Length: 290
Image 1: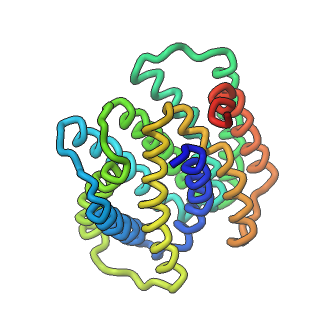
Image 2 (image 1 turned 120 degrees about the vertical axis):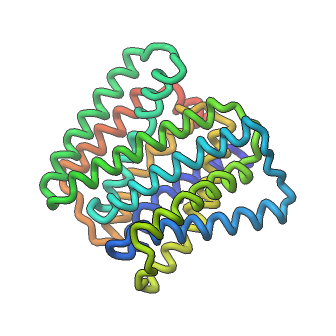
Image 3 (image 1 turned 30 degrees about the vertical axis):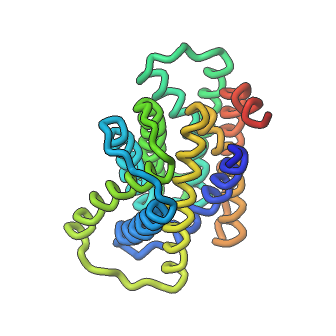
């Protein structure tokens, strides 16, 4: 598959995922929709692995890669599903637009990469300025908005760390096998956690059920597979550039389909974040486009 096709697929799925997460919510029990999403995704992945006769290596490096990918999905998605009850879907996508900056910072600390260029530092400063504006917008929403934003921001850090970790393992694992191994770990962690905290199946609407099905098949199987595919073929910073487009598209979708009305400060914060991303990794962006 051409990398650009995988890029466009991830952009489309990531643009719709925040809205689908909100629609799949089951009230106070925020873990059950996530658990069902991952179970659907895991079953679909295992069927594809069996049908396509893809091997799932069990070497030490492969197990390390499953752990790296699965722990990132588990921690990040758990925080996202909790925070999505209080944060508009478009704003979730905007915060996830910070993944490239977090990825660069974590990669710098973890792998002792080369120092940031002047453009890189300017990009980080612009991204932080945009984040400050978004925090100001969150204080105007309701009491739980700021904790929700902090939870989403922590999810961004976990996702970025997982991206760097997967690349650091150096494991040669088929993309679908990596997705299956990661989802298997996530389900194994989510099931006992849901049972201990809630343990009762919530009442779901038709829209919540269909949203969960979409997230399980596209948000998990197709989305994660394409995501790990581009992760395998490109540098971590290049993969993170996917989030340059999704914040704006998700804001527009939330406004059109979910009645969300982001204020001027949210749009300004988004613009600063995107500008910061462009300045920070302009050369990588040009390379991806070419």
